[in-house]
Image 1 (cartoon, rainbow, N blue to C red):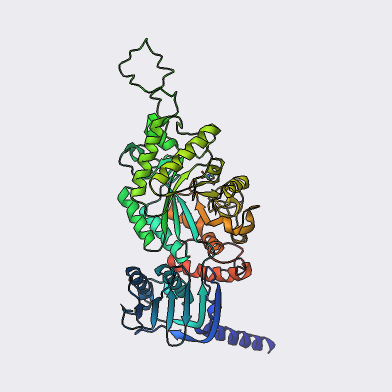
Image 2: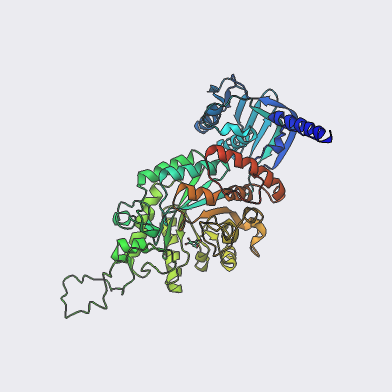
Length: 532
Ligand code: TNX
């Protein structure tokens, strides 16, 4: 009898909860990542129905693009027409006057949904929040017959940092345009706004430079492990830049130098260190008059490298040809890079003499400045004199970050122990490295950029970036397994204030995000820290 009663009670609870309409999910329980600055939940819902339409208030091509983006995102799962116009609609995107900022507000009432911002970027972020306020089934690419309620309430939101980045190392293993775009889609949905492409390293040169064609012909041929590499043509690169820009993401191209340059050194012998020649034409000299072993004008090219050691290569920092080369590369890159930054690398140049390193970094910054851009570099560059506006990317050494700060330069926070997506989750992770740390999901979430490094405060920090190095990663599946869910944790570190962040709350929200990734076909790591 007692058992029967319990069974009936359990059934009642079960059927009650399974019938529980999604409309009872309040706005602040919808699972929005990154967590907005404020969420007010109100009773009632807005029902997205077949006659819904999108109204744009304002005239701006970017506004139209955001409206179409929202329609494209909602159409497949709902099957609704969702016309976009300036005339009327119950999903309203309004560009308001004022200084352009990424701030937006989103208000949901039973009658309408309204997003306002002073910029199209802000509206785009509002749209991303709106999508996450809908049932997770909205992620489907074919029609799902169901109701589409959005809980009433109001969200006010703005980012903590102006630079919210993710880096892809396309040098160790080449990553195709298609896979880069797929990553950009995910970045956009998490409100990242910078994509840093690590375009060259010892194992590969991945961007076409028309004035130095062998870089890709020779330096781009292979990758770690000796498999076939690849490279982006300048047209490919422009396509990535445009795709990113359509999602309000700016590309930061990196040419890592003077170390991490073996692929370039294998492509062009003259870039290799050799004895410096005095100016003059030696072509008419005959052997006997001159010792060609000392005057090593044309050293041998380096061997192609497919291992994963670091710190063994260097450009010849004392040869003019090196600076001709660097200037050609930077000029060609600048011509296809609308963003403000060129990343000049500068890490782990273990075989470059200290003085030579400093001379090189200072000269390369001058070249970047000459072409109207700002330099970014790994924290070691702060041992040189930094140009105004140069950004030091902190990954390892706090003293370098301090050197940058003392020079009045800003710091981009990528501490390897928290922000590196190539670090293993634990000792059983089949991919990745662990030289810096094992990084579980809570480790990537529970840190504060503004207090992480001694003496480096909020005002010194430009933003946060999550790098994905690819020594052990060579497919979309590998990328997804290492990046997700940690990329979402780091998105929240970059976008949301420390006061708003809370691990227990994030655990619940990331479980909901996991359902979205499942629908998207993203093979994320099912961290044991989360009840998926
Ligand atoms: C260190 S982080 C490097 C990279 C490696 C990475 C592997 C940095 C500036 N240099 O060259 O790929 O570790 O985790």
